[in-house]
Length: 349
Image: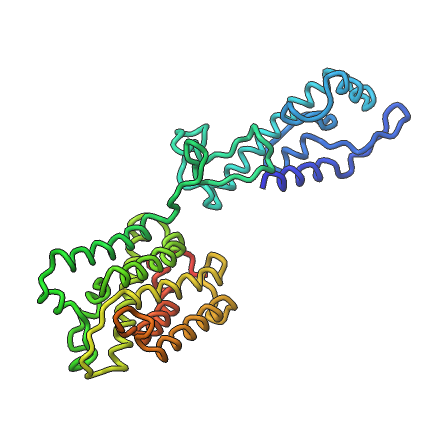
């Protein structure tokens, strides 16, 4: 960003600036006023660009005096030019800061000249302007944090673990049985169990698999929905809605049968679908026919068809895998992402 503004100012300042003085044609000069014009500042000096901008570039003082004599300027004019360039640099800094605030790179006020709340996110202007920087403050020791997942994704994963601990250590068997979803005598006979079954699991291995995938797929969604209570609520409700619709899809296929269904696989499948659309849309909501969404959906269908053919051969103890809930939850995630994005105030495109 800084390089683009600086280049624009230099080009504006250099256009048409060809003069002759003392019978010698003067080369095009870069005007400090051109730099200032690019950032909306008014720099008065009209001499050639100083031999160093920011006090670190260009030749020494002797070289500057030599350049000043060749350019037809006195050393005093060269000093005035340096002051003008310094003013232009200050204007450039302020313009970049205003642009970053407007574009959302910096959340909230607090640049160094303000209240100082976000001093850690301001770039260092003493280093090269081409050096990349991030709006996330670095750790005190300069190392990357071990966990970079958003809090909402961590809370969702933690709730899955806490629910299983409650299921195995505190909940009476009758209560657990009441929370299990069953399509008997009909898929909507006990509608509340569509949601409660999401938080139950058949063992630590079952829980670990769902929790790991939930954390992986919830991370981009949590960043997409945004921080705060509204973003976290959108993530939780999206996960729960996909899980319930996944269970309902299973119930519609096996209506009237005495199956008991537990697990968060339908919700995790919905998270996978939402993450696929975000990746396919490069941070926004990608089209359903975008290459990444199509490839992700194809892989999801293929893997679950393999599960449908092999049955419980891949699970410990021969437990059946509800591949129907996986596919229904994935389809729900593809469709529900846009309305939940509106609820969260996230960009829908």
